[in-house]
Amino acid sequence: MHALRVFSKQPGFAAAAVLTLGLGIGATSAIFSVVHGVLLKPLPFQEPERLVSLTQIAPHGAGVNHGPGTYLTYRENYQVFEDIGAWDPTEVSITGSGVPEPVQGLLVSASTLPLLRVQPILGRAFGAEDDVPGAPRRVILTYGYWQRRFAGAENVIGQNLTIDGRPVEVIGVLPASFKFLRTRPAVVLPLDANAPRFISFGFQAL
Image (tube, rainbow, N blue to C red; front, top):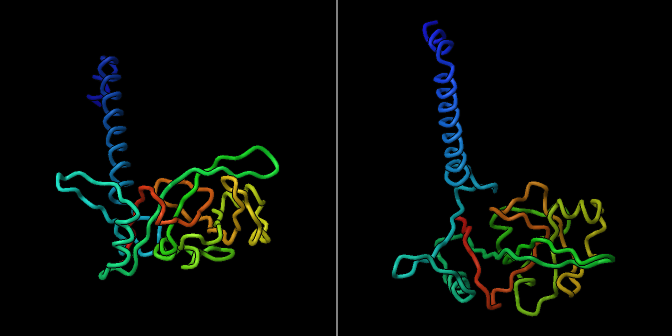
């Protein structure tokens, strides 16, 4: 009651106190959200405790971008992991009957989705035959894009999309629960690890 009397007699002080308290709560909530999202929240995959991300450190202590040669070296010589996958976010253009549509894509090696225990709800995932230079062009649709472009039609498997000017066969559709780190891809394509690009790799199952 005494505090209420003080606040009623000094409304300016009360407003400042409430504002300060509000700012403190807001800052604490923001910090917790960042810490939870980066450090505490588990990865949205099965068995997240078995997944690790591999980073190579240069002699001066800075992180370095991974080239295809580095990934291939690790893939061919790993001994303590179940497997190793690589990925590369990208943007592609999909053409059809209308104006070309730029969408976010995700290039992955054939081992990436199996390591994450991600199974398509239609069709299949990439196999070893899709992970070699010169393989036929194939694509897996994410659930949202499948719904938006094909209205959830199950006969989408085997159809062709024109991606970056080239025909690509649809071989699968991912579940609605699929998320990949901070990317929101519409389509998932095979990663040609022999192409000259920087790539990320990790998600080895221990």
